[in-house]
Image (cartoon, rainbow, N blue to C red; front, side, top):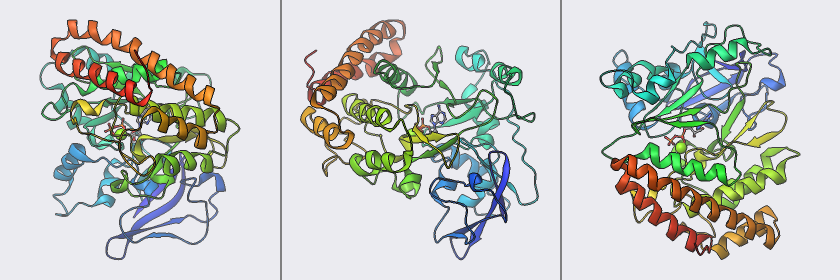
Length: 411
Ligand SMILES: Nc1ncnc2c1ncn2[C@@H]1O[C@H](COP(=O)(O)OP(=O)(O)O)[C@@H](O)[C@H]1O
Ligand SMILES: [Mg+2]
C-alpha cells in the first residue's frame, strides 16, 4: 500500500486491487482542496481501476530506457515489477504536487545535488550520461520515452531557500529536468528541441528556461511547476484530462481531446488567451513537423485544484520528420493524421478557438516569421558544431516544407 500526498499533506491510500487493478481511497476528513486531480474530487467511495493505475498516478511514470533500468535494479527482490512497484520507487520525487510514500512513512523528498553547470559544460570526466542515470533515476518521477532525469541544482536551491516567501523548510525537491538522448536512434535530439523551443518563444508562447549543453548532449530545462517558495504547482497532462492510460497517448483528436478538453477543465478567466496559445502551439507543431504532439505533450498547471487551470508552457517540441521522413501527426485533425494545410488550420482556429479570419491569419504569419528567424540561428550553429550539420540541414528543409504547406508562407 502507498500513501498519497498532495501539496505536502496526506490525502489518500492506493493499493493493488484484484488481479491487475488498483484502488484509491481518500483518507477521512481530507479537505476538498487536497483532491489528487481535477478529474477525481474528494469523495467517500474509492476509485477502483480494473487495470493498472488511475491516469493521474500513472502520469509521471518513466517509460522507455529509464523504466527498464529501474526494473532491472528493483525487480530482483520480488521477481516481478509492475507499475505499482515503479510508483513506489519514483514516487518520492515527482513532477507536480503529488508524492507517494510507504503507508507509514513521512514525506522525504531529498534529491541529491547536481550542478547544472557541470552538465552544461561537461566538467565531469567519464560517462556523464551513465553517471546521471545511475544516480538520479530513482528520483525521477517524470514520464517520456527518451532518457531523462530530475536533478536539484545547488544554486537554484539556494535561491529558493533565501526567497522571502519560502514556506517549506524541508524543501529538497528537484529543480531541473535533464533530457538526454539515444545517439543510435535520435541524433542531435537536444539541439533539435532547443531550436524548436526557440521558435515557440518567438511565437509568443510561454516556454520555461532551457539550456543546451555545450557539446549538445543534454538539454536542461527549468521545472515550470516549481514555485519561488520551493513548493510545487499542480500539473496534469491531457491523458489525465481525457481519462486515458499512457499507452493511449496517441488516441484522440486536436479538436476534442485537446482544444475542447482545455475549455472544459480550465475554469479560467484567461481561457480566451489560453485557447489562442493552444491553437498557436498546435499550428506550430504542424509547421515544424512535430509528429509527437500527443496527449502527454500538452498539460495544464494550477495553484488550486478547485480553481483555475492554465495551459502549461510549451515543452517537448521536436522536428520528428528529420528522423522519420514519413511521419504524420500524433492525433487527428478532421479525422486524419495527415499534416493539415493552412486552410484546415484556419478552420480549426475559426471553429474551436473562435478567432476571426484576420486574427488567425496573423497567428499563422507570426509562426512563419519566427521559423525563418530561427532558421538563421541554425546555420551558424552548424558551422560551430559540424556534428549537427546533417540534422540541422534537414530541419531547415522540413521547416520550409512545413511552413509552405501548413502556414501557406512564402518565405
Ligand atoms: N519544464 C517542465 N516543467 C515541468 N514539467 C515538465 C516540463 N517539461 C516537461 N514536463 C513534463 O514532463 C513530461 C516529460 O517531458 P517531455 O519533454 O515531454 O519528455 P519526452 O521527450 O521524453 O516525452 C511531460 O509530459 C510533462 O508532463
Ligand atoms: Mg513528451
